[in-house]
Length: 121
Image (cartoon, rainbow, N blue to C red; front, side):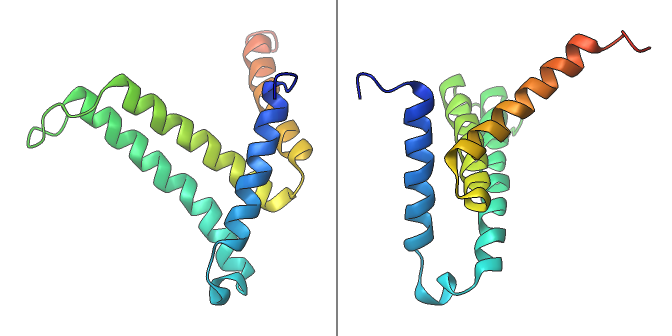
């Protein structure tokens, strides 16, 4: 692992999680590929809800609950959102190189749009 880059480690973890999620389901569910597709994408939304809940908890926006979360809680939930998105992409590509390439391409696209903003106005 000492010579492994962050990208290599991330690819390995994404592949492991995807394989585990594919086999760690009931036989009935395993035979329903569309249900698995929906589950992977829906999980991203569930994790996003947990990030929103952490932000509400940090800011005390629910007067009934008060302040019940910290920045670390929010950051952990946001990391879960990002990872779950990667797992969903991997579910559809089954190729960690493509998964990370799509992820990086999207980040590069956003940077280019920001850098080019105003040049075409």
